[in-house]
Length: 269
Figure 1 (cartoon, helix red, strand yellow):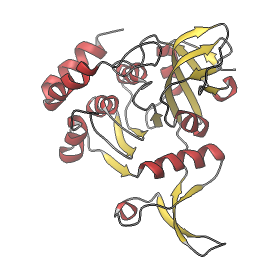
Figure 2 (cartoon, one colour):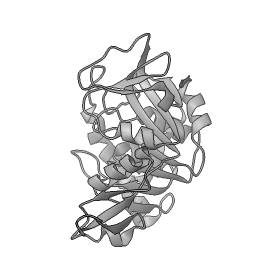
Figure 3 (spheres, helix red, strand yellow):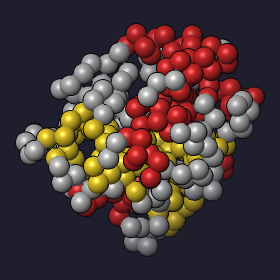
């Protein structure tokens, strides 16, 4: 059964310097509050994994938490570039950032392989690109049935996967619904799993299209209402579009960014 804990306790117990950490959530249910707690606790040298690193990883990278990024797309959705990400890659500020870039299909299948206990996944992808020449996690395999040459992507098994969801019950079973991404696969692939939720309820009510993660697959659950802001949690909150627009100006300048991190994360409980 998953442990019920505060966010501070859960991050301190489950995430350590040097860990491979996946924070997943697609458009909504992005675990911003957990990322902010990682920054507050001063964790560093992390390999951050995410299919779509957006503002949440811009903040982590700019705060100096990241050594490496494993990803398949990066940007501020609907606005533009991630300026802290770019500064780290182009100028090594605040630290040099190693990157391991994949296609969306490649990343999704890497999680699936990890969740399935397999060493790699096979995809019909990467042809016509130079991505395979830039990473050690893409190779080729020949189909034993047809002789076709296919791409093979190494399994992803994060030390910790962090996701946000709408509800958990007191046994640690988690339910999320709405637009979902690879949260289930990322959780099942990980060695430890932290879930922040909008609320803890006595009993989960089944929902059409809902994804249920059983308590035995979760390490810790923390009740964090609004834990996805500025993204949203379907049924609980709406997307803060103004924040994403404002972030472009905040993140362009190192001093402005540093002041924002201090005022909005480090000096807040």
